[in-house]
Image (tube, rainbow, N blue to C red):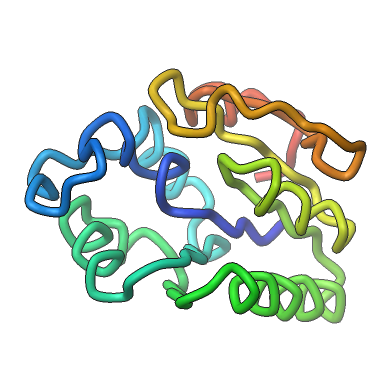
Length: 160
C-alpha cells in the first residue's frame, strides 16, 4: 500500500478559487471535490506536506477539517525544506518497501521532485487552480497521472 504525500494549496483545497489570494477569506475555503472520501479511503497512509506561513496553513487545514483525515501534517517555510522532507518520506517508504505517491499542482515543484525521487506523481489540475496552465517543459516535470478532482484520482490504477 502506498504512502500519499499531498500538497495543500490547489491540491487538497481550492485555494486560488476560494481565497483569491486573500487571508481574510479563509472561511470561504473548501476542499477539492472528493477529497474527504479519498482521504478516508487512504486511512493512515496520507501526509500533508505544505510550504508557507505556518499559522496561515494551519488555519486552512483546521477550517476544512483535514487534520483528522491524515496521519501527519508538515509545514515548512521554503520549497527547499519541502524537498528535503519529501526526500525523507521517500527514504522511509523505500525502507518499508512501499511506494510513495506525490500529489501536487505544480509541475516545477511537487511533480519534479517526486519524479526525481522515483515516486509516482499525480498532478492535481483544478479548473480554477493558479498553476492549471503550467505545462511540463522538461521530461522531469511530466507527472505519472493528471486529474482534476479526487473522484478522477480514485479511478487511477493505483492500490488504495
